[in-house]
Length: 402
Image 1 (spheres, rainbow, N blue to C red):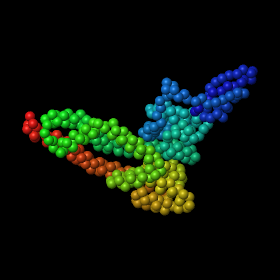
Image 2 (tube, one colour; image 1 turned 180 degrees about the vertical axis):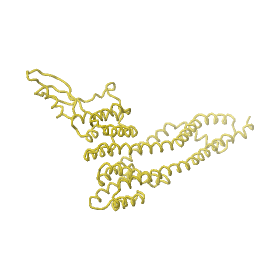
Image 3 (tube, rainbow, N blue to C red; image 1 turned 60 degrees about the vertical axis):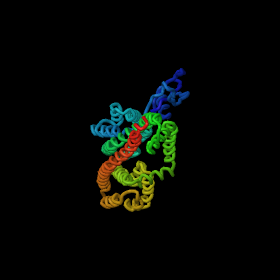
Image 4 (cartoon, rainbow, N blue to C red; image 1 turned 90 degrees about the horizontal axis):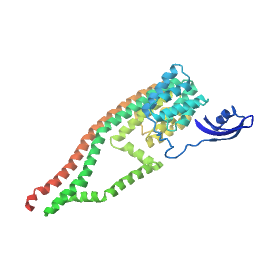
C-alpha cells in the first residue's frame, strides 16, 4: 500500500486535507470521493530519507521463514479462512521482519481487490521468481492452497540443503581463519622481535632465517598496501563478474574446477529438477516452468543453455530433445526428463531425479571436504615447519656470539 496526501472540497464548499492508503492513485481518488466530491489535489507521500526518520530495513528474504510462512498459508486456507485475512494473520505472526512486512502489505492490497501474485510482486521485489509464478499459477487454476503447500515443501528442502553445506564448511573455514590470524601475529609481532635479538648478537644468519625476516619486514612495512591490493582485487572481480563476459568466465571456471566442478553440475541438476517438479505440480506449463527455472540457476552457463530451451519447446520439440544441447547438465538428467515426458509423469520423475542428485551432491561434498581437511593441515604443517626451522637454526650457534 502507498500513502497519498489529498486536498478536497465538500458539498458545502469547505476544504479538507487528509491522508489515505491505497494501491495506486486511482484507488486513492475513489476513496476520497466517497467523502468529498471534488478533489483539488492528490499526490503520493514519499518516505523521508533522513537518518532519524528512515527505518532501517533489510530486503533479504530468509528461505526458512518463507517456507514456514507458505506452510502456514496452506494450513490456514485449508481451514476456510478468506485469503486477505489469511495473509494478515500470517504476516502478524511471522518473526522475520522482511517476510512479515511483505505479507502485511499484500493483505492490504488483496483487501483492496488486487490479485495475490501481483500484490506479492509489488510488495516483495526480492521474492524468488518461483514464488511469484507459483502463486500466479495457483490463482489461475484456483488451487492456491496446493501451490503454497508445494512451495512450503520446496523451500524447506532448499533450506535444509543449504544448511548441510554450511555445516560442512564450518570446520575448514574455522581452521583457515585461525591460521591466517596466527600468521599475521607471527609475521608482524613475533618475527621482528626475534630479528632484533639476532641482530644484537651479530654473526651470519642462515638463509631460511634471512628469508623469514625479509618476509616479516615486507609484511610489517607494506601491510596497508597488501590489504588495499586484496580489497581492490576482490572489488574488481565482483565488478567483472557482473558483466556478460565476466559471468561467462566465472560460469566456465565453476564447472571446470577439479572435484568442485562436478559438485556444481550435480547441484545445478538437483535444483533444476526440484524446481521444475514444484512448478509443474502447481499447474505451470512445461515451457513456462523451464523459463522460470532457468532464471533461478546460479551458474551462468547452465542458465544460458536453459534459456534456449523454451524456444525449442515452442517450435514443437520435446523436452528431451530440447535438453540435448545442455551439456553442462548430467546426461542422466536429460535422459530422465525424456522418459518422464514420454510416460506422462514428468513432475514425479523430476522429483525423483531431484532427490537423487541432491543426495549425490551431499555425498560428493562430504567426500571433497574429507579430502580437503588433510590438505589444509599438510599445508599448515609445511608453513609452520618453515617458521620453526627458520627460528631455531640460529639458536644452534647462538652461544658462539655470547
